[in-house]
Each structure stands twice: as C-alpha cells, then as structure tokens.
Image 1 (spheres, rainbow, N blue to C red):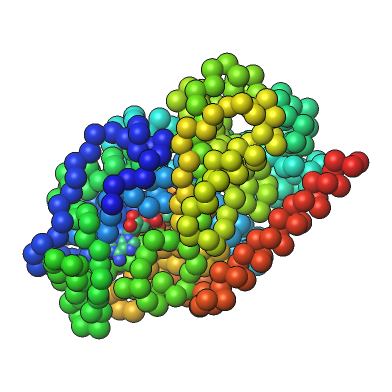
Image 2 (image 1 turned 90 degrees about the vertical axis):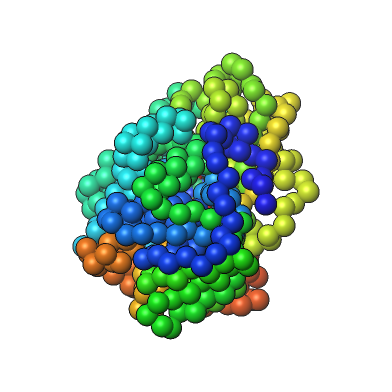
Length: 428
Ligand SMILES: Cc1cc2nc3c(=O)[nH]c(=O)nc-3n(C[C@H](O)[C@H](O)[C@H](O)COP(=O)(O)OP(=O)(O)OC[C@H]3O[C@@H](n4cnc5c(N)ncnc54)[C@H](O)[C@@H]3O)c2cc1C
C-alpha cells in the first residue's frame, strides 16, 4: 500500500522502494515491522556486528512512525507515576533515564547521519486548561528533585506571552525535547541500514512463524527468513501472526490535520517555535510546520475506521482554542494506529528464547521505540540485560472483544474529568 496522503508523505525525501522478499534468506536476526522500533533495533544490531533482515508488510514507516505528531520528549505513555508506583523510585529513575537516552539517540542520529531534512526544532511547551499554579509548580519541582529533569515553570502571565487564547493557564517548558519530520527520520535510518549491509523487504508481511527450534522461521507470502533471533515490532498495525504479543495490546486510533498556509495569522496567535501540548486525557498537540501551517493532532478512539468528518472534528478542537482560525482551510487529514498495553507501558523483553518483543509504545514512541530497539539489541548481543527493567510491565491480555469497549469507556470517563476541571476554572 502506498503512504497515506499526509504532510510528511508530501514532503518526504527521495527514497528507494525496497524489494519484496521472494527467496529463502538466512540471517542472525529477523525483525518484523519497519517502524521506528524495527528500524532503530536494526541499526543498533548492525552497529554491533549482527546481520539483520527487516520485514515490512507495507512500506518503511508506513505505520504510526511515519505519520505522527513528531514530538520527541522524555517519558513513557504511562507517565512517571505509573512507573514509580510499580517499581519504586530508584528503578523508576533508571527507567526515566532510558526515556531520555531515547531522546538523545534520535538527536544523535540526526546529527551523525546528517538528517537535515528532519527539520528538528527545539522545545516543548506543556500547558494546563484549568487553574492550578501550585500543582504545576509541584510537578516541575518533582521532576527536578526526583528525576533530575529540568522543566521551566510558566505562570499564567508567562503562558499568555506565548499564546493568544484564554484556554490556557499555567505550563512548563521542556528544553531537552524537540520536534521533527518523523517520516524523513525513518527514511534516513533505512538508508543507513542498507549502507551497513542490512536487508529491508517491503510488501513482505510475516504471515506465519515457527518459533520453537533454535533456528526460527518467518514466512512471507513469497519468501522465508531463517534466523537465530526474531524481534516483533509490529505496532498497532500488527496482524495475528504474532498471537501472544498481539493479544496483549489494543490498537488505538488518533488523528492529525494540517492547515493551509496561514501567513502571519499563525504567528500572531502562537509566538513560539516549540511543540505544544495540553494536559487532557487525549491531549491536543500541535506545532507550526512549513513556516506557517498548523499541524494539529488529538482525540483517541478504539474505532479503527477513519471518521468521515475527521477534518471538521479536529478543526472544532482547534477553533475552540483559537477562534480566529475559524476560516482556516484544512488541507490534509489522516489517522494512525498506536499499540497500547493495559498498563500503558511498552513490551520490551523476551517472549521465549530467541523471540523478542519491542512494541506497544502507545502515544509516546518517538523516544521509547528507539531505546526499546537499543535494549533488545543489547540483550541479543549479550551486552546488557537492561531490558529487564521492564519485566514488571509484562504481557496482559487485551480483554478480547470487550477490551475496546472498556478502553473507550475509560477514555470517555477521563474526558468527563477534563470537562469538570476546565468548567470549574472557567466559573472561578
Ligand atoms: C497520529 C499519531 C500521532 C502520534 N504522535 C506522537 C508524537 O508526537 N510523539 C511520540 O512520541 N509518539 C507519537 N505517536 C506514537 C508513535 O508514533 C508510536 O508509538 C511509534 O511510532 C510506534 O512505533 P512502532 O515501530 O512500534 O510502530 P509502527 O510505526 O506502527 O510500525 C510498525 C510497522 O510494522 C508493520 N507490520 C505490522 N505487522 C507486520 C507483519 N506481520 N509483517 C511485517 N510488517 C508488519 C506495519 O506495517 C508498520 O509499518 C503518535 C502516533 C500516532 C498514530
């Protein structure tokens, strides 16, 4: 399938089409899924001297990795409280450190591989839509004291210098975060994988796997890979071929739109080049791209099909914050699937001897998928067992057909909490 029509596919760098696997091939490691997790893992393994075959059912970064918001920041989808409650402070600090290492991996690759077309831009501003200066200060202090992570507190006055909207109260600025063109990053990695002797096969879905012998087999419609290790990186688009992992997460949809070129209008409303997100359950997240377009993302649902009114839905969210944009045209709109475990943390670890999982990065994969890939590469090469930090976040059944209903109800419940907090701030 070709890339969906997105801002990223319209501005993608020149890239080759990779062949379809149509033979039997032997390798040290077979990676299933060429999103950011698979590509990062492949590159790390090649750098450690392993031979690698990467199988992709569509095209490189055709899934979430090539169509997301492009925010690269520390942390995990579950948030630090979930990690701390489950692991205790000391291990939670290590896990947070890994999330930062993921950010630095991406930054490092951009500079070492000269990936200028990723257009990295520094900073992420997080804002709250209800009045809680003390809560925001406490959060910034906690991140500094417990995790040694600097977030600059922004008072309501500070926030108003950045945005022309009455929707936001306090916030914080994360200077270590950045935003970029995720598809061009993945395409850049794929070039380096080939340059280092790796193989990538597109339109080559893994449809069946034999995983019990010491040499494992992965069948595609026209070929076969024999490998000592298999890494599953199928994300939210994974089919049934990898059943244990697939039954342990839910695919969750989220949406993005991009406006027409807005000229000075957008800079009058948003006076920062940083990426912006609010605190809602399914936050609004946005950033200025192509000098003066607004890329706006938000909403989550367990419904996999794209709503007909996707553009209007997100435009409504956008003009709720910036009514001045009511006449702005939406030029591109798309959806994407993320893989979420019930505990909202990734599955980074062993499924059985020689079979690895590196998936379920939820809505926070731009840093966590790269570090996941590195940890699995270290495990395969015997360099470290850092992946064991994620042992407490083991496979949990996704609830079968009830899972999506439960997840959707939980989302609606959290939306109700958002509404309640925001309406209290409005009436104060
Ligand atoms: C709209 C959207 C916005 C987001 N915004 C952000 C953001 O701003 N910042 C952030 O950190 N995260 C964000 N995320 C989340 C982030 O994109 C994901 O967590 C991350 O890309 C997951 O990477 P992945 O490699 O695990 O999965 P994917 O990128 O989905 O890649 C999996 C690949 O595996 C392939 N595949 C599946 N099954 C098979 C098979 N059997 N055989 C062969 N290939 C297979 C798929 O075709 C796909 O290409 C967003 C996600 C979406 C959808």
